[in-house]
Image 1 (cartoon, helix red, strand yellow):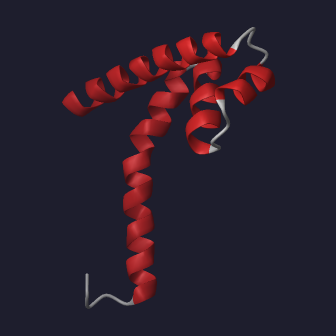
Image 2 (spheres, rainbow, N blue to C red):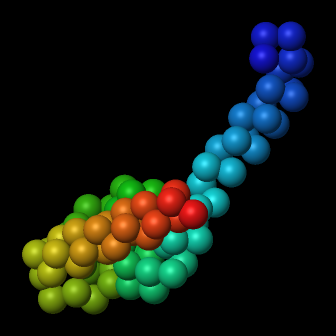
Length: 85
């Protein structure tokens, strides 16, 4: 890509990034609202588990942590299945 103009290189990088994120977005959608919100708020927005607990109405940080672990496990399984196809 060294001969490519900067603007074109940036556009290409954005397209590659979007293409890589597409399967993750589809898998997140299939997880359901609760999982999607927990993962999104933790990984994208950087909220602490305590903040997520308050924002989403969980009874404790431990319950958010447990739910997040289960959601991530399901997300990994979905992404693994999609790679195989």
